[in-house]
Each structure stands twice: as structure tokens, then as C-alpha cells.
Image (cartoon, rainbow, N blue to C red; front, side, top):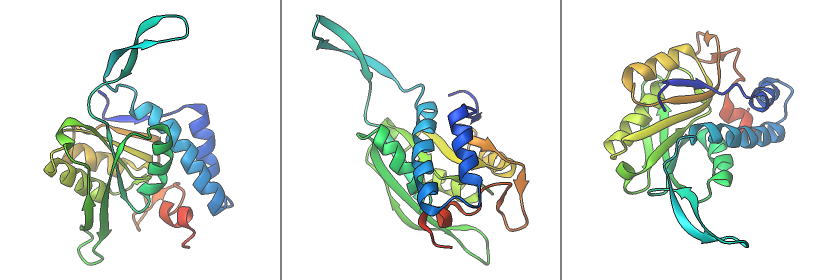
Length: 210
């Protein structure tokens, strides 16, 4: 992928995102919509996967048919909200290897602190797709990508539902080699670091914790 930022403007993506933004949307509906939209976004973020061919028999004849090449890709969820995108993507790519990065924000320093990190082996040979619904300040996303690179990953993409200009700029500065795929680039961050107009806290809305 060449562009640093790709906004997926497909009508189904935009329609489902609008439903997710609505305050009246229930937890169950939000979760289902996130699962559906993650599959649509997965089409875009995997558009340029390497391909090869393999000989197969159709009911009519033999042929060399296209298949994915190389080691299975890795999906890495940035906990906890990343799991919402992960679930839908795994339905589409069930053979993917899965990793998790756990981060929380230190309330005094406002910097991300790692509490969990478990990723597949041979990251240097895999396409790695890091997923988190919100790219807000970009601090936790940058930290997660730092850790993935330290673990050997060299071909990384970042998939999110919503992005703020501040987060995109922070990621571009820290990791210009990591393309971002999102459903929308919103206006700004508010004083609390939430994306505006946004959709609130994705984790709380997904898990019904607020």
C-alpha cells in the first residue's frame, strides 16, 4: 500500500458507521455493526496480499488457480477495543495468526504502559495488521507499532474505525512506513482526548461497560 492514509468511503461502510455513531444504538447492535464493518474494512487492508498459483481440479478440467502466497498473515489486537475488529476479520481470514498488545494510559504521565504482549512467531515473514477502533492521540498506536517492530515485524498496516487528524499526524511522524486504513477521518480531538464527532468510547459501547 502506497498511501499513508486510506479512508474507505464505500457506501455500506459509511452507512454502518453512521448507525454506530448514533447514541441510541444498543450494545448488541453496536457489536454486530462493528463485526460487519470490520469485514468490509478487511477487504481494503488486504487488497494487495501477495498471490501465487496452485494446480487444482475443477469439475471440468485442471487449472492453475490463484491462492495466497507466503506465511499466514498476523492480526494483532490492541486491547481491549481491538477485539471488536479482530472478531469480524477472523471470520473472513480464519487462518490468520493472532496476537495481542495490552496497553493502558498512565494518568500522571499520560504515556502508554504495556501490561501484555503475545504475538505469533516469525513476524518478520508475515504481513502484520494491527487493529484498534480509534486512532485518537496516536500514543498507544505508536507504542504498539514500536513493540511489533521490536518483535521483528517489517510489513505492518494499521486498521481503525475512526481517526483524528492528530493521531494520523503522530503515526505518520513515528511510523511513516505503516499505512493506515480507516472508515472516517473525523474533525479533531476534544480536551479529554476523545474523537469529535466520533462515537464515544468504543470499548465501553462494545462491552456495555458504561
